[in-house]
Length: 506
Image (cartoon, rainbow, N blue to C red; front, side):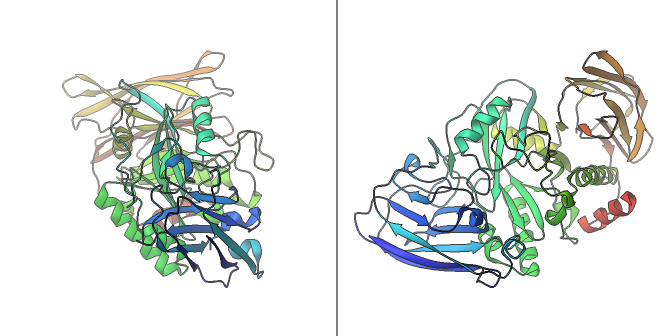
């Protein structure tokens, strides 16, 4: 069989274009070959549906191979696909355009392109891998959320924001796994733009499915997925801001219903900043406080300033009584040797590193730790910490980053050591949003330690956070606060809180 489907790339083109073709009996494999120039590939998303309306493949063209394949098994099906029987009847190819970038990058041009569909026996060059997670309904029935990758209660290192060739990244999942292993990551969440992985190559890293809900109103990662969110299709073809806002709210509702986590990414970053001002803060589970610190492709992006403002936003929300887990994300897209613009370092998974305290390393425990805020973030260093709270009865109790202190706690003892520092580490403590500098001791050539005791304020809400930065203010570490009590929130929406940070920053 052979069919040619015609599409158009332009700012005026329909945001959802469809083409259909008929699959004959005894077809074993489908191949879709696109003739669009690779440099425009990341502007196009495709969804392939079979004659029973099952999604059989969804992906962003990105920098991928020209041929997309759906075959009988995961090693003969392109990433983002669902392998299995190629059923007869009318299939549909839906094409959606990346509205966030299209007019900015191609202006008023109109670029026609085509998909040629065939059933030839062609080798799949970008296969899913050995582990198939998703079934025909795109539920993750093949993903074991309780699998134990490593045993023991300790801090585990990982990355919560990554991209592969399923969207606009440059690495195949297999290579992404190798990079994660090379960076000594324990867990890795794949968060592609509006599309989800259907499986993954075998690896010792705890790889979990996620997604980056991507709109002109902002980006949000979803963690703990148990199936492909239905709202993703609407995010692809809705262009009006009002409709996109409804879609994001619907996705947030789906997260609540299914126990998934909604995490706002790079809230102040250039054209990717969060613009849904009325989005309620009680819908937010996590907040990305440092996103790809190597990003320097566009001077106007002001990435370093955006990260510092995100840290300020997290501190504001914790001081206001929220327990929104502050996390990091490499947002890694590149090959390992590539750099952005004039950056002095490569953008790689695990920079920054997000550390979670887990009983054992399982996907389920990763999600639980994020919910409970048992988390800290580092860059270019390792850390050992010990905290104890003292109650009115003078009994000492150990506590970790992000945990709740007993109501009778009157003092907090702390000792933190940063290792492998290439610059002096300047420690500080945030007490209900107030920054206090701490005196540290250089314990070796590349290690710094701070220790002491702080008395807890007798207030309804007590929030204490520790962090460190270099002498010029560059990020080193952020520990999620330890808290006691509760308070009435002064800020109810993202817009209110972000505007407060903007004014304070000026």
